[in-house]
Length: 369
Image 1 (cartoon, rainbow, N blue to C red):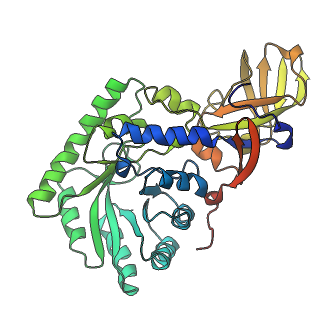
Image 2 (image 1 turned 90 degrees about the vertical axis):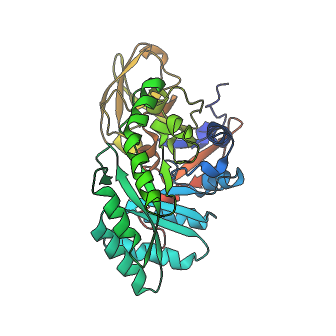
Image 3 (image 1 turned 180 degrees about the horizontal axis):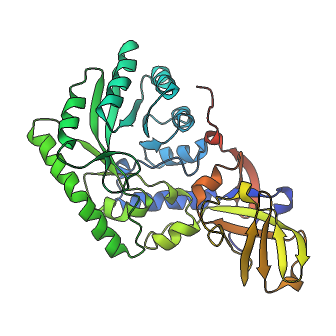
């Protein structure tokens, strides 16, 4: 029997998300090994799995720091037992009050967020000061991705100085996500990452030369986990490595992590010769990529995905006569993070058997706060 199959799969409705904890545990062990066995260097992102159980698996393995992107993910981390969480998002509007409420509810935890400009830092500081608190923050740096962050130029260090002087904030260091570096050749990816990091080292030198404490550096998502792991004093923050997916297995082939999340779908129609329709629609798999980059079926060969709508996925297949309505297909999502966010629960498979469900609790925009 293949690793992904379940003997009692007829007890699981489709479409469904399947997670394999044994493979997750192996991926956690690989992540720790990749940073030289020092679990304290890892700050894995929780956006990929959004489950308390996987956080607890990481805590049991010695990982103590986590990254998140939403207030719900932050609350999940804290209630799961994490005592160090960085929300890698610049807070605006009601998010600031929700964030501070969690800081108040978990006074023994280190809870931080990002800023990338002086005005946002002042707004955040004012909110903390109003509550008689001091907030922790990291300066978000744009070193080429151009999504968020302060550009690395002659103004970066002055902004760092000004934020450091704000009384109600404690600036802990720098956050740098170089997710734009995705060359599938590890040598070229490493060279590009190192090149983009040269100005970061220059900024670090300015910071320490001015008498500030050495900044903590948090970097290295899944695409650049390999070069980040080589920077001994930096924290690494991969997330997709916990579940892995079809896309990253092609982009980052050197990482010996395993697929640990699978999509279950069933054939619901054979509308014409050579064509099958499954129940894996847009609402069941991340669909932001072209149609040929949605799902990789593990137990179907010689197929081409032709069309997808909200509840349907149509494929042209070679062995049409051998397939029947009701047949089960297992597939690896091209992008697992948005795919997981489409499911309320994950069906847990152990030893080729469905055994229980886990709540994908942080897919919510709000848990309690």
